[in-house]
Image (tube, rainbow, N blue to C red; front, side, top):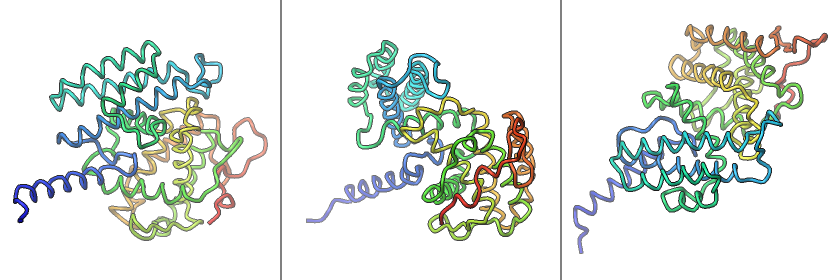
Length: 328
């Protein structure tokens, strides 16, 4: 018996939709905002509900504080405020899809969370579309950043820049597999920013040797490449913010400085993808470098050659991300 033509067409269409969705994400990281296509809006809706489920789990955890006694810990109120913003986004997606059926459930979920009825909210989230086969708590932290980036029109979420966003995520994944994270004083945000500034400056001076080798699928970045230090700095803060355990202690990380770090690295990746060894010619790198200098100064750190130190220190300290930390 021959397969009806309509079945062949539907099968092809469904596979095309799945492939399109796969290319818009790198794991749980969106590479662009959704288009007006219902399937893309629906994917964002389901992931938003999953992120809210993760937030409800975090808010109801016995170790989650209810006050600001520990400035590094997110409080229950912090989670509730972020979940409220996520549910607003979910409602906006439903409106765009002209779906009134789930709107009532989303509004009920918001009321349950407001009343601290997190278990009831989690059950309703599952019934409404939250995914149970992924780490919802990690997605909460990723999605929190995604919505902030979306609000600020971050270039790495522009659909026209998806090729650059893919390379950006690929180099972060490459470096994250094998590098030692800073600790103690050098885990300070000011130390990370000052080292990132020095890494960018060094990379711009030797632009031809700072370009990575290979495509997004088989990247190679030598240990002595200063841009690798910049990537490591971004990877470290991302780990601090998105890891389901460490993310709980990310309240002390300044969002503005985090945005500046991401923009600095993204701009480098974009220039390397487009211009290769001449990547350092783009004026944005000088602007980003000045911004990092200003951020380091504001955080109480200074950039001084290959030394980064806190202003209160009498003796310069070694770089917060020295090559000896990286085991390749």
